[in-house]
Image (cartoon, rainbow, N blue to C red; front, side, top):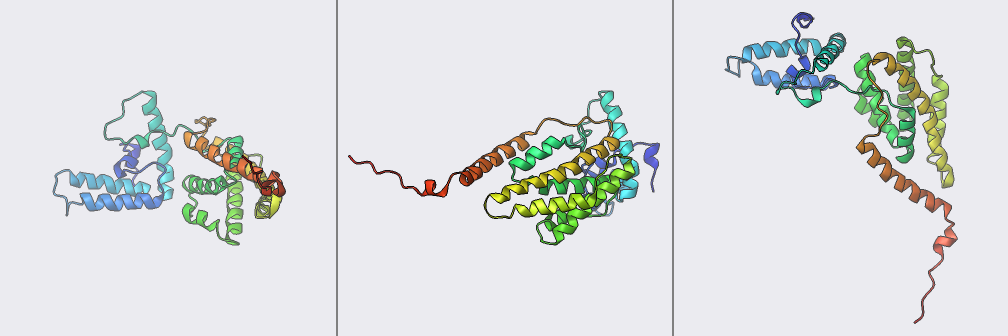
Length: 276
């Protein structure tokens, strides 16, 4: 592995023009694109040779999760030092390379409200986000996108949800988190309550209880991220997109509850005719 960056610092993310949280497939695609553009055989500019050396060196480090995990903490430290000196960013540095302001932790009440006001649809994104973040930080060799798609497949979704709960517990234990959860009971509770959401009549409302086991997992995740990202402060405000999502979901929820609570005979009663 090239370790020249320990002595002569280079921003490999900037060289490959990728986001610091980009997945390995994105990094590989960026390398292929830049290699085709700057390879000396196709690019006759005098700077192409050195540019290609930098591109190869960057991919040698970022191309595998093992070496990338060694480089990334150093990259974070360099960005913090740069921000502390209040150095003006170079024009060639894209804005998405700014230091991460907030950790991956999420307040439990954030998760509860987002799940409630989106009729539990937010939970699909919650699973995807956890897979994506843990894939990068723990080197978990998975495809977050395909696993999220698998949540829509009966039977397969049972195995995928159990796998995520189990790995979160393992990663939290390895990080030194003291309070853990029982994977089996959390999974059983999630499956039962989630299954109730497909019930007929008002019993589908019990499906909202599936928020409870996931909230327990989120609390453990927060402890995990606190140990992994101790220098970052948890964001307590909702983003504009989250607020808009909850407003739309809240309207749908109110209309749905209105239809359940109003007796059908009342809704079927014809309006009185007005005689002139």
